[in-house]
Length: 114
Length: 116
Image (cartoon, rainbow over all chains, first blue to last red; front, side, top):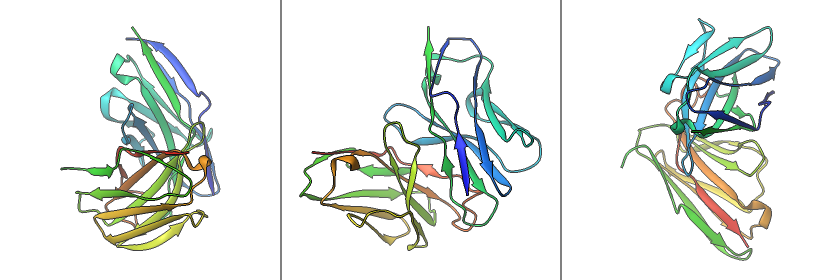
């Protein structure tokens, strides 16, 4: 079984400032890791995913995340946010076995202020 | 239409009503999912269908009854719901059910359900 903890439920940030959203996971098996974004009144959209290889993963809209196996973390970063980045962000984990389901964190709401 | 669509977008129902939520994917995917998103709780997987067959029921109460007539359509039939069932119900699809851990899940916009 896996679990995901997103340490911050809300993160206010000024436009053009950097942002980091923290995600820690626990699992007894090797995992795949994902970040999804949910804009108001919409479903979830995949930002990026880590499957294997380089621990620094680049995604859409200028986001990137770094997989740290020793710290069981997969923090999401963006160097300069825009008003349009206001949304809820979800970290998710899946065990590396066929058919394993996604387990989501509780989400972090990002509010970008002008 | 493209992607994953869900109807209705909003639904208000009494505890004795029967209603159905509909999901349709236009992506040619083979796996479909129902999730429940409640306020202040993590997204919860409810059901998984692979090639029209149910492969996962995550201890969901029987007042929720899924139906998958083909790989493109997924329904969630609702009856005698409770107020705590009020939530956003999200449908998703993915290309390869066996490799669901690898393949991206595409989500619909959800149905906001309120049980009165």
